[in-house]
Length: 32
Figure 1 (cartoon, helix red, strand yellow):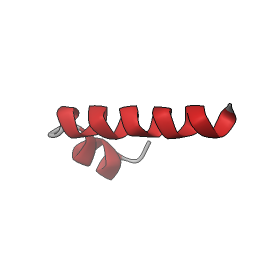
Figure 2 (figure 1 turned 135 degrees about the horizontal axis):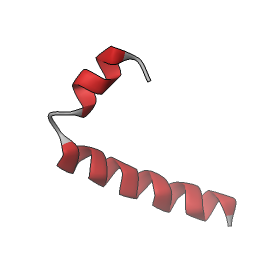
Figure 3 (figure 1 turned 90 degrees about the horizontal axis):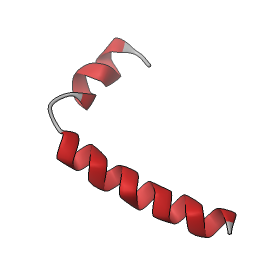
């Protein structure tokens, strides 16, 4: 992972968690 992405990643864990949850839901429905 590039350093810039890590820098963007760090300050917003709640946002990332929400996006991750949405992505897993979407990918789960897509895969199933």
